[in-house]
Image (cartoon, each protein chain N blue to C red):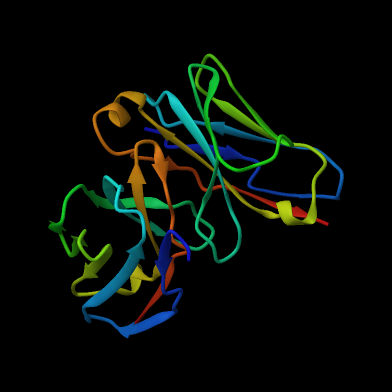
Length: 109
Length: 117
């Protein structure tokens, strides 16, 4: 079993839809939880991160962590074609980030 | 404000050769980490440099080595290239002080795509 699991997709949804991207992890010691977005032929860019269970909102993006279930989610409201990218979750412990393989998201105009 | 810059963007090598990849961190950052990202996979941590020393290392063989210069820029060297070394090599910079107070917030460059034939 991998430490961090993500459905690779692709996940294809129409423009304007609410998108739910998910990760599961196995190490209960993780201290913080990050979401990065990676466009094709680019490096990952940080979307948001959170330390605790619960929700954190930033514009159209909401990160949700359930430590009891070891489950991480990223919700995107009013999805746009520019949101088409690969989304990587990365739980962290100290300097160490453990990366999921990413979910490829396609937003159809 | 320039972000993280990497060079070269693409390169092709043959098995057994050596390669050097270069990275300039984001202005104000003092820590550089290198990652290997195979197609369809998440980044894999190679090592981290701070104060010109390798501070942390992932599960990579000694063929992978690096250096950090006084201006915080960094190089990744890979010797005796194997076909399996073909990947996107990502450099990420951060502030050491931010890690001591919380999350390891990384700023990535666009990467160097290495193809080994």
